[in-house]
Image (cartoon, rainbow, N blue to C red; front, side):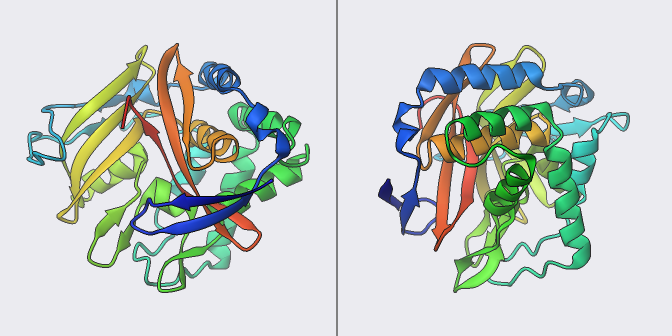
Length: 294
């Protein structure tokens, strides 16, 4: 089935032609809700137990004032980083933040990307999602296909500015990127956020909404400045990279460019994904959690 989708996110107008399995409309919301609950139950939450979150004051886009004199996140030096998270953290300094500068992927960076994907594919939550998607006809049911699929949708380089291949789904969602005269875009990950705070690049201003799930993880709609440029971003807190990628990948395929209804511990929220298509290649343009109506 060939669909034309008009996407007005990311400060651009993109007309997407996406090819999807004929049975995508048969994937019911309840299946995605049940699967997301299974992902929650399969996940580890040791990281969250070694975090201190200081929410402080509430703010919003109409009154963007600093009501948080302290940092948002304090990470214990004894936090038990998982193997996947350690390989994730190797990638955080691999990318050129400016979208108008091309990415140079060296052999070392390529090896680090491949190491991360290899670790992802060993995670129960990733295998659970990829098996589900393969049964629904999105791709073949084998590990090599899973790895190639994750590589393509998350790490394939594409352009956001002037035809320059300076962006990827992984960089945008998990690290953030800088657009000329518009400041930072993306950045929906708590580990990157905490790193930015420790480097004094991020100044947390406060939050507007939050959800916590039985002292195991949280979602926060946060306001901050990045190198003094204002930004609002919704992030998971305390989650592993594999849980976030599992959820985003699930919704990228089953609810592209739409709200994807999911839940943890029967608390409902959504995942919003945007798809960028370049010839035959479909990549993540953005992905993030959404609390309530927006």
